[in-house]
Structures are given as C-alpha cells and as structure tokens.
Image (cartoon, rainbow, N blue to C red; front, side, top):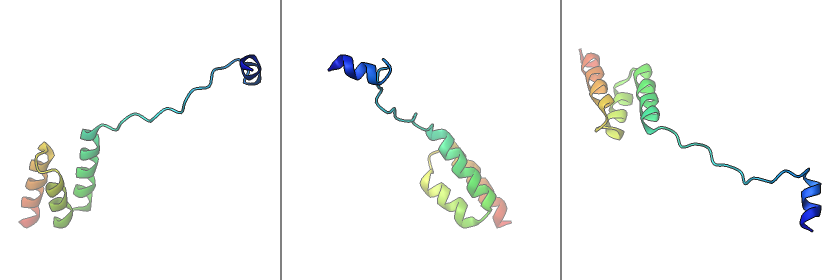
Length: 70
C-alpha cells in the first residue's frame, strides 16, 4: 500500500500545511501609531496611548497630542 501511495503522488512526500510566520509586534505597534497619526484626531492618539502606553511611540503620540492642543 505504501508503494501505491508513493506512486500516486509522484514520489513526493506530502507536507503538513505550514503556519505563517508570527508578525513582529513592534511593526504592528508602529503601523497602529502611523494610522493614529494620519487620522490626526485626539481620540485616535488617546486610543493608541491607552493601548500602548509603555511603548516608546506613546511618547511621540503624547507629543502629537500636545501639538493638537495648541
């Protein structure tokens, strides 16, 4: 039976479907910051800060909020 299975698939071993590579979390946060910055609203920046308050980009978002307040 094994020989028959090998003959049917041309001798190629079947591989299990692979999982996609995990996404870089820093890249995802950077994209979210850019989206908030492009939106340019207080709400978008505040949401970014609430989600990523410990990320270095949160400081930039806080500075962006300061500029919006002026």
